[in-house]
Length: 240
Image 1 (tube, rainbow, N blue to C red):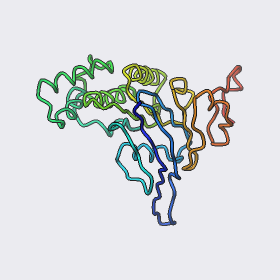
Image 2: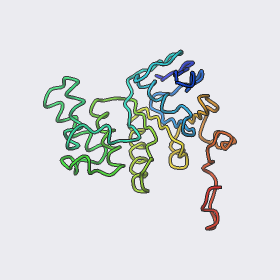
Image 3: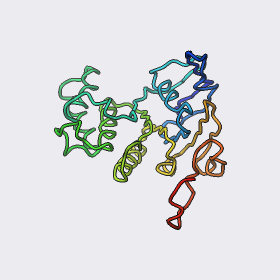
Image 4: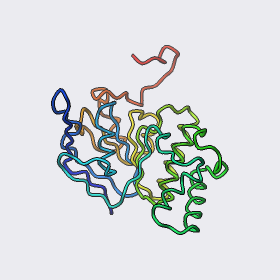
């Protein structure tokens, strides 16, 4: 089975206050066709690791061995929109891959259909909802036939409907044997989708296993609220 192997990744940044270690000798593997949730508080190193896996940054030391190129769905999906409409936006990728006009048109139509945006193909892309903009970013990757898709905090600023849209898309991608990586601190929204669960804490990998095994850990020690916490009365509806 093909894998993405994260092998001893360390990333150190030079700052005015001295060197800052964003990732410290992080190693684990991701199977092709799986859904992996990487959890951690803000500043734990999730986004840095995402950029390294996708080739946007180089590690200070260590290596990434990947069977394929990865596409990214950024937390601020607006930053990825280049076209005036979803149809135009999706076409940029396959055009840059030097596909023929017919191939580009087919790739655009197929990806619009897959993410459920066919009826908004010519709608102003900037006016799409947050969940729709994330689906548009995925459509761009599908049009380029990228087999690995990374979501960075995909639930940020989404309402309930938007969360459901993202999760439905993740389930569809999983069914298509795409390799999906979700970086989030909102475990209650997606951990049930995961084949693998990894936790980063202050640059260190502190857990690597299944979602069920992860729920048996003391997640609060890593500043993550356990998603199994239940509500039974109105007084429970506050985090203390």
